[in-house]
Image 1 (cartoon, rainbow, N blue to C red):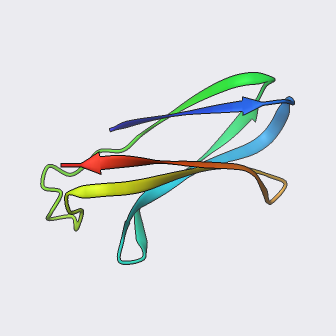
Image 2 (image 1 turned 90 degrees about the vertical axis):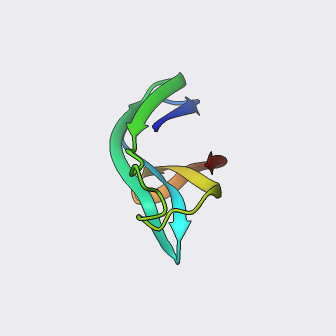
Image 3 (image 1 turned 135 degrees about the vertical axis):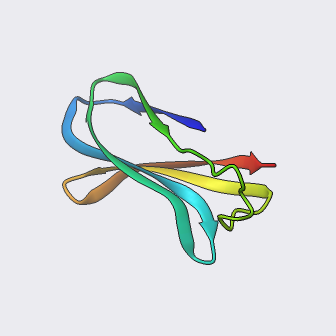
Length: 89
């Protein structure tokens, strides 16, 4: 599964971090990735990849809707957040 995150920034920001997490199962996120990023004014596109196990049930990932959350952190503070849902079948 390829995850694309578009971040719209009003400023140039170096030294930020993108965190995307979700697919929660029993209080644990099966997907949790961080990536250092530089934001420029306008739309910034970042891609992350997650390989879903061929046997999703074996990994504890049941069919259904799951939330994915994206956060931008700068100087140890979350400055932007958004979310979406994905459907696992």
